Length: 391
Image 1 (cartoon, rainbow, N blue to C red):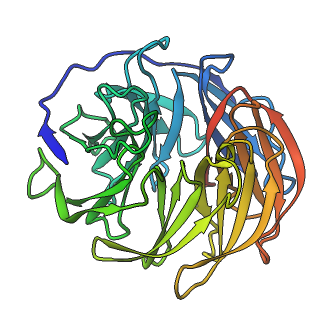
Image 2: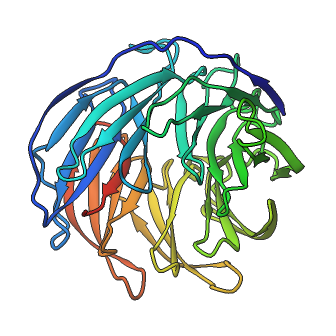
């Protein structure tokens, strides 16, 4: 791992917002991030009917923003952090991170500020446990300069400060098309907030850092021991999710379409199970993406893209965290990049990026199984879905 300190740089770029309407307090609100090479304008704030599962097609608010592909809502629901997945050849060639204040009554968004991510195609962000720093994963499609992990301080007022630290990782070079350099796909904190795990698709490793901003504000991350978790060659780690009790974790591996299950303790991940999402199927079926657990911790949902385009449902063993497959369901579209369970647990919403739609399906909270489709909402290149909770 290569880490360096970065002194403050000037911010650049601007983001505009369109007018908004006030939603009823009886409805949840849904934020949709998207890619903007086509017709999408950026971020959409929509009304969601928790009883019927219907999304109102008329936006409450539209935020004009370039490629706001990933949304991070603070735990207190006061701020929205957005990665602008820009890079060379795009309308805006500079990777950026934007932050918005969320009105506590209307949920209307208003821009606070924006900073550069100092890398190409930032694809994911997450807040540290104490909300003092934002960890941004610069994926970087091109081999040169490759992907990086950027650390951005967050002020008490929610304002983003310039990047203070960056890390890059050696690549595995197993796949000559996709792994000739590092490609950081996501970075998340441990449940206790003491460690940070960076999943590098180009390296076939999870890199582990200690997080201690009080000891060194300018370099809050230091390599842990061991410094990484080795994964199968050519597997391409994507997203890591910890169980609610903090004892287990699950990881999607995009290129091999697998889910690894780990025991977790004090910064160390020990693999205990490996699940194949597309066993015996052609390579075109292998494109694992998002994973989310139900609020009660009983079920894990995983999306697989490629030609499979499926949502897989697993039962979670509460003692071991091991997975048992319950269902495979078509997403009724193409490229389910992300999805979200509604706060009531009655519906699952799928962002089908390449077929330009959000698909809402019923969910049985007792069995975890997915039922009939209740809505297919046209939406240009949706990439992420986040709910705002009622105040």
